[in-house]
Image 1 (cartoon, rainbow, N blue to C red):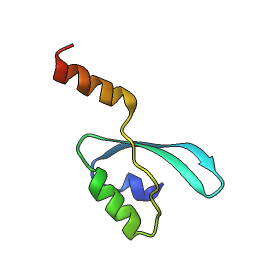
Image 2: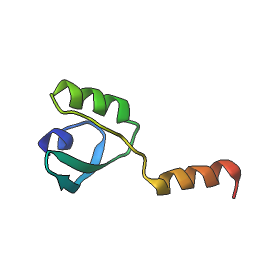
Image 3: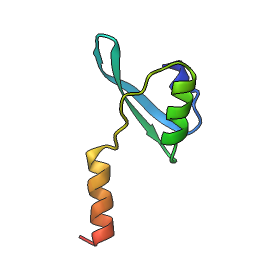
Image 4: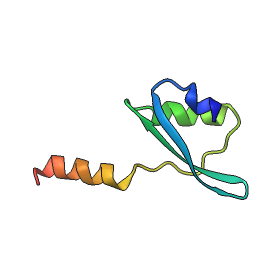
Length: 68
């Protein structure tokens, strides 16, 4: 999607799956962009149904916080 390629901070993007009118995307960034990205997507007329952090990222954060 050209919209994501032009968004500041987006380092990679890929289509994970397409389900009729829904598209699952994976977007990586080198900074925190989630709130701004969703606001801009909605402002551009895209519907956003959910936003998730990858499980491996959550696990790494937990390990870092608990010193495990």
